[in-house]
Amino acid sequence: MEVQRNFFIVAFLLISFLLWQKWQNQLYSHDYKNEKSSVNFNFEKKDYHNQIIIKNNVIRLVVNMYGGDIEEASLLAYKDKLNSSKPLKLLETAPDFIYQAQSGLIGRDGPDNSENYSRPLYHAKNNFFELENNQKELRVPITFTKNNNIIYTKTFVLKPNQYDIQVEYKVHNLSKNNLQIRMFGQLKQTIKLPKERDIYSGNFALQTFRGAAYSSTDTKYEKYKFDDISRNQQLHILTKSGWIAMLQQYFSVAWIPEEDINLNTIYTSYINHNIATIGYKSSFFNISPNSHSIIKSKLWIGPAVQKDMALVAPNLDLTVDYGWLWFLSQPLFKLLSVIYSIVGNWGFSIVLITFIMKALTYPLTKAQYISMAKMRKLQPKINEIKKNFRNNKQRMSQEMMNLYKKEKINPLGGCLPVFIQMPIFLSLYYMLIGSVELRHAPFLLWIKDLSDQDPYYVLPVIMGITMFFIQKTSSTHSSDPLQQKIIHFMPVIFTVFFLWFPSGLVLYYIISNLVTIIQQKIILFNFKKRS
Image 1 (tube, one colour):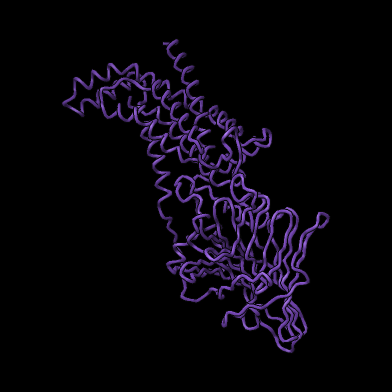
Image 2 (tube, helix red, strand yellow):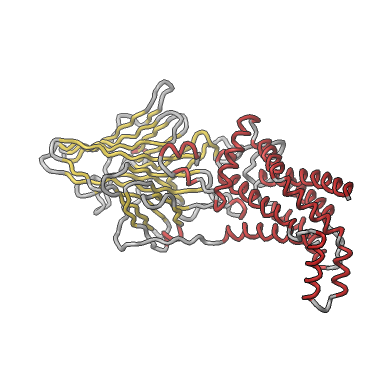
């Protein structure tokens, strides 16, 4: 009975910890400087006459010719919502929500003058550019001429099937003066989401990190919350390498500057009381008269696909955040991907990976149920000890320990499988809500999205029923009313928890419970046969 109670208590505590973790603030420590690092511009109203569209087969960009900022970005291979025909709009400029990727040239001779917040008006030959099927890359130059002496050319370079965009600045100095400029790239987003974009606001089990992140020479990957930016705890980090990003569930946007022989500056800012910005500034470039210079940076706008992001920049794949159990979630996802490449269905892949996990943990499961069977067999003697020494707790514990030693039973032996299986369960949870490959992935019948909750709550109810059968088979008779209540209500409590969990995770738990029931029957039958 002690083993059964421990099993449910440990499981309950781990699930409770998962819920608690979603409500807690993650604490970060940084060194700050009182230097104003941000690059802020007045928000320009959308002017469709000063926009161009750039498109390859996976992404569509809308560029504002004032400054050449990307004001909209649609991911053509991903739908906005399940069963929707609209592509997902990752970047957007609307009255109630702003999410932009800005870049420019600042400094003494930069056209994006940060002192008067002006933006240059670039010009392009057309207003629509599309990568053709036979093209290896699409180059879209836009130009701005200052006083007929300095020509600034900003070029967007897109390649087929790729979400990383090259942004190049070529500064042609025809003047008689030395120029001094530096490039910046920043991401600007409204902190509070409009209701229609905040699709998981009512589901604590599907919420993931949304905010800023960065990588530097000294830090591989660090998240930085919007709350910290809004409290004016601004970053000012000098680094030769790295990137800055904004993250959300399944998708990310990141600027990756060229490694500087000097230092880039990573910064954050808070503007207009509701807009967070994270960006970088390069070191200064000096351009002699009658010469030119080229400055480059990469911009990732797309799904958080680890293998692709790892090729774009070191540590960028770490933005696929699997939480504190990443060391388990990552190999589990790789194994799941291998299975998917064979069966072609993520739901069946989850079923098969469950069988694999149960096979690997079978020795522990066997030890657990043999221990529980021995404890059940000893229950009359345990009850007798409790009755004889009910007024002497110390003697009662001593006699019970002597009994366990005599019968060669570890009373905690049944808990070890729980400590092994629960991390696997939590790792799968993080993997399901963090891997874009499972977004809108169907299984069978009404399960159209394994990363979302069961719309009809059928799977959680089935899970509760399987848990009830495990409990009935495992439990022993007890006179303790508290233990009886815990045992009777645990399936109900877990069913309520699982109503909001990803259906893929509930599917895993159902299959795990069914396999457990079968293993349980076989183990207990063989134990009784030997006894």
